[in-house]
Picture 1: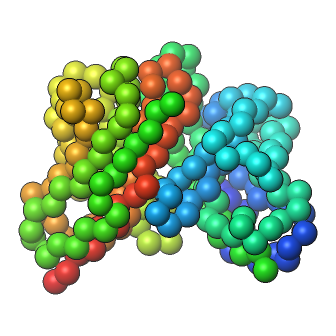
Picture 2 (picture 1 turned 180 degrees about the horizontal axis):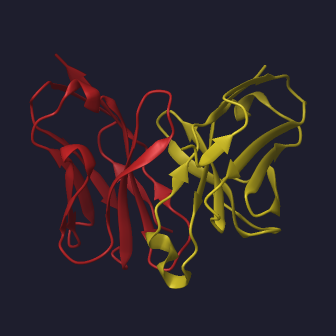
Picture 3 (picture 1 turned 90 degrees about the horizontal axis):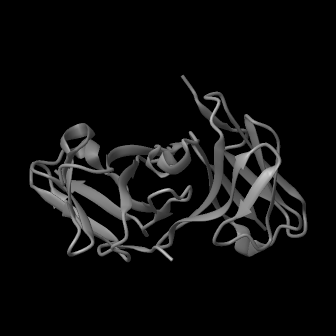
Length: 117
Length: 113
């Protein structure tokens, strides 16, 4: 019954490495999101996508990029990982219903905990 | 820009006691409001949402929340908590018509036996 799958639960990378976090959803949702979760800061939006090949910056896009080549897959890329990117990364998806889209519930993956040494 | 403040970072309560988790948002423009819960080592799942209509919203696991437009608040309540309610709770808001959800800082609810 898994609907949003994040490929890695735990990753350990070194400073300067290129990191790919993969997310796949099987609900045919148009919207997909990447959030970063840090203690005391809640969830902060990194990027979101409302269609294939479309993306918009969230609140903290610096140091990240994204790719959405297929509707079901949304990848987060850290071009050169740094220690301040050690965090929990959450992927989510939702339906797009025009002006009602904000009412649609986000379905989250289980998260990917990244440690950068 | 929309913002959300959860007034308590941690709330310890005894089992079977009532609990209230507080949430305030910044704008009085038409909004949708949500509470999500994150159990240990899991992703977030929806607890309840307010879209329109009755200001008292009931959710899963006996939780409810009340939308107060004049105070821009959406506090979460449960009359009697269980050990299984131990989790982190996130309040979130989006402007109507917007795609992006803005989350609060989270409140960690700890239930003591």
